[in-house]
Amino acid sequence: MNATQWMTLKKCAAMESLDHIPVGLIVDSPWIPGYIGITTMDYFTLPEKWFKANLQIKKDFPEMIFIPDFWVEYGMAAEPSGFGCRINFFEKSTPTVNHIFSSADDLVNIGKIKTPNPKTDGLMPFILNLYKYIEPKVKEIGESIKIVAARGPLTIASHLMGLTEFLIGLKIDPGNTHKLLEITAKVAKDWLEAQADALSEIDGIIVLDDVVGFLSKEDYLEFAHPYFKDIFKSFSTSLKIYHNDTDNTAYYEFLEDMGINIFNFTGKQDISKVREMVGNKICLMGNVPPLEVLTQGSPETVITKTQECLNMYNSKAGILLSAGGGASPGTPGDNIRAMIEGVKNISVG
Image (cartoon, rainbow, N blue to C red; front, side, top):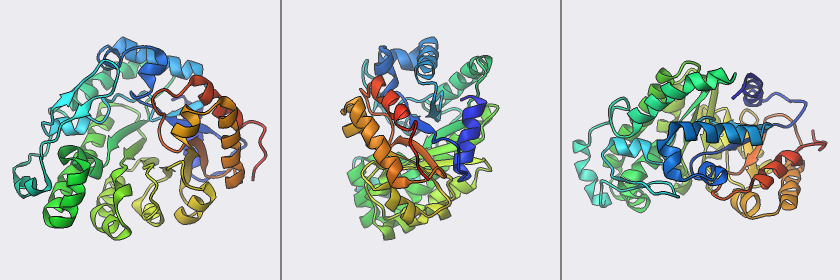
């Protein structure tokens, strides 16, 4: 992103009141190739096409702050591939990840699992090498890669054994579930550090983990909060973002203690109520519904919902107008422009 966008993002994170409401969006391989008109396989394997695709979306939406921006990723496959999960790639859709645990009963074998090294294992070293290749190109156009991303420990664990089996294991074998989460949390942290080491101007991280949204308050405090808090505490960056767009508010009151600056949350919650639950120290990134409105709605509907969201929030401090989640596959460019248009000439705060 450019220097102005980065400064705006930092001001949002600092809960400053801006003279305008900024607009941001998480975009990655589920949306970018289809929007550009190339195959997912070309996007993943041809660096020049990948770079041109990312340049094109920035040209088409210059007002948009893309997060994390110039994100090198292979869908959800990076971290699980380091454990030896078999990955299936497709021409026009994101990869699938095959589990290495067949059921929750297999957690008794957790001692046999080797913690992967992001610099040598799975797809992660390929991503690191691509970052080293594209960063000079990004700098040549006057921009920087400022944020690196990782899936959270619960999401990584669910890819190793499947979501249902992970949640069953959490209940029937909490001891070994903790051992698994200690490993996956370390991988998330090591992966963020490896990316930051490969790049020269990293000053922010984003952790994406929707599986937290399947936990009760009590289970969150036992099986999630300590691991996330440790991950965010480990980075002396100026910007820490957490994404979870499930419709579960059980953990909202603990986000400040988690140590984040920006929270990207579901489009199904009332943003004013989210502010009450989260407190006044975390910037809210949201929350136009990403599928029903931003993907499937008309531009007029997007503008209406955007303005409803902003009127409901009624402040220019601590908000980054966005989708209540990432950009869904098939989201039309006209609807993204409508969301940008919807923030203009609106009087709030």
